[in-house]
Length: 84
Image (tube, rainbow, N blue to C red; front, side, top):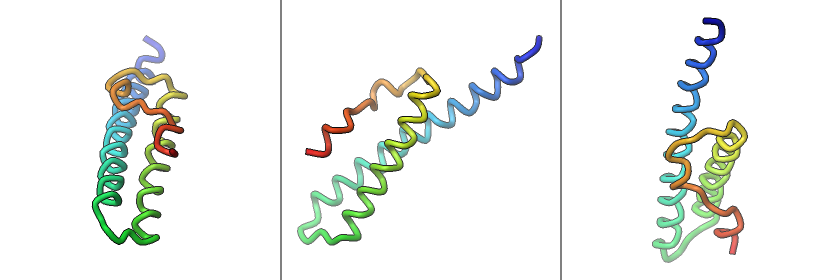
């Protein structure tokens, strides 16, 4: 009775956050692919890739803090994996 609306709102925003995490992952993957594909990559392209990575990591950390379950398992990465 009490708190149902709060749980419903939380579920709604958790779903939105999951969608944002997945989209950020796709954007980051596209940015990495573009950077690898371009022969003469400039600083701007590298900055865009790092920005996409930072967005993904921020959203991913927020999802982990909120303990969201869903398709997040498929997009899990190690932060150090791509720094090498």
